Image 1 (cartoon, one colour):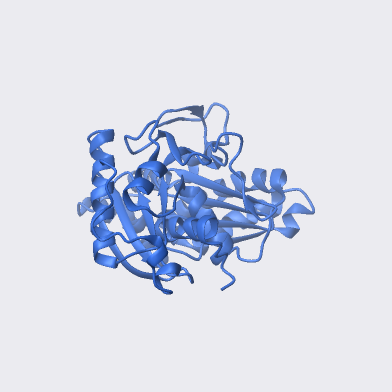
Image 2 (cartoon, helix red, strand yellow):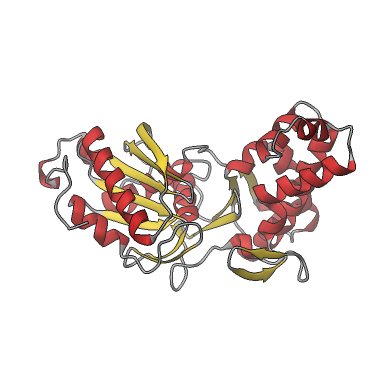
Length: 340
């Protein structure tokens, strides 16, 4: 953190042809820190995965830099570094303003990393980078008006307007998971002062809570049986049981999908997007979640918006955070837009 060039780093002017088209994508999550080597086709060539240190801001940042040191030494020189973080980011300065699940506040992350590695660095909110990857390289390629919802512990969002990621006045736009579904609904928590947020009803956390209640009400269901065996009720378990045909597990996903559809209906009415891309871990349920959402949108959204929008699953799966951060570096620093 003293500004000296990291071991293994190289003067950008001396990169080979292949090295000039490779970047590091960094997914700085609340529990995991993933760093991937990615080429211009958004192909993940190699990856390291470790724990995010959250003891303090200093420890978190020191760990990030150490992991980047190791990645550069292992992968070799790169042309740029992109970082996605669960934070409010001042995009113009590349600075973290505030964070939800990592202890980083008022950190000039772009400048710190750029000084250490002597390559261009770009930083943005993790949902924005996932949205960018889907728009330029994934499910939304070719669209100009697109929304993305990432269903994880919470619900993140991204907006593409006129072909560009929309970040708002201070970089804090697209908190789509915090739109109100029910005015007097449950408190969201996690620092959110609102009640009845979309993420209370349609996140991975919501699926788990709904499944636990279902297991209590239906003691003969596969969900209840798994719970009695000591299996934790997770979104992954609910999806697996639903795919096997368990009625109660499917009902949990259908209800979640319908509530997701209520949120998407408002977004479709407001933004008139060509496409809504749904990603994140909870979206692994696929059509079990998306088809109920589409039915609600078809019933409730205004015309012509409802006839124009497509609601689709994200193209990028478990590595979406790394690939999104890499896409950010490619688009903003290397001018690679998915057309190569």
